Image 1 (cartoon, one colour):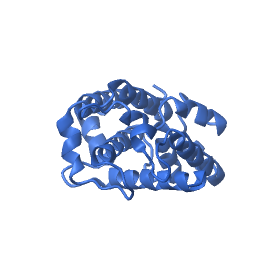
Image 2: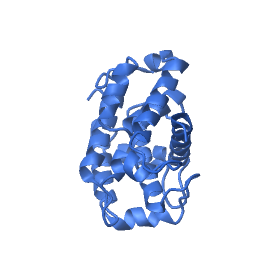
Image 3: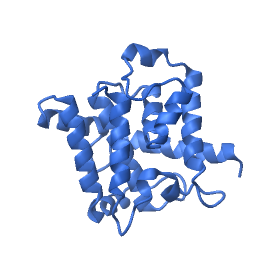
Length: 209
């Protein structure tokens, strides 16, 4: 299977997860609902809302019950274990919620690509550098609008390539190896260090605090 086909499969998975994150799943809140709840709990303080959301995500995903509980209602469009697809959904929703808390329109295609970029963890810094986006310097809404379609394509291609290079068997997107967040799933738990890294990167991309 060609790298292009594999990358397209990966992007299908990410697009699926993003749609579910924005629209929610039965029994779970959408990214906007989750973000609004944390803004309300923290009196509208963006920094505290993001920090507490990440802390909750780290703690909640560390429990097998939370991930396992999502498994029965999530089915990816390709052959991926339920616990893995659950983690993809949870992580994508966390990043999208952070973007929303920081004032971004998460229905915007450029913002969606930035969310995907955050999914790569520390590699997001290099991807941003390659396309002229400085991590740690918050992009204004006007700057977002100036990012070209070609740049969006480059971000998506870079994300897909980063994840695919860690994929396993030919013909299947082995997300248990591809996604940083998933590498530490042990007995239903999740690698907390990886979760924190992705949360930190998400804050650096979407907030200058």
